[in-house]
Length: 121
Image (cartoon, rainbow, N blue to C red; front, side, top):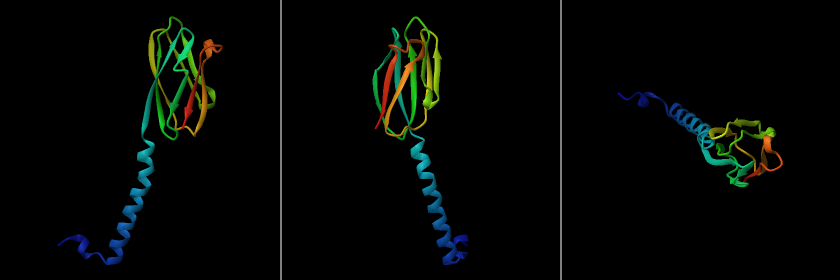
């Protein structure tokens, strides 16, 4: 005999409600697990693109590529992002979901020219 048939109507209703609550709790975690990937290139003491629009509220994976002949330090200290890249190297940084707004990233070794703006919409 089916075990569910032995349960009372109230018990089945409670189990169903708990199951739905469990699924609702998981739903935000699934959408928050989305990752948007972008590439940023450092070359000739500059960062490209100089302006990058990204989705707000989504974790970012930034692939950093140093195509220059000197090291670079990609950073935004407010977001706790800091990565040093040797010449001709590639690395990845992960940025937690951003609130809508603009965020300036710099190459700290070339701060006068190595700037870019990430705009979260």
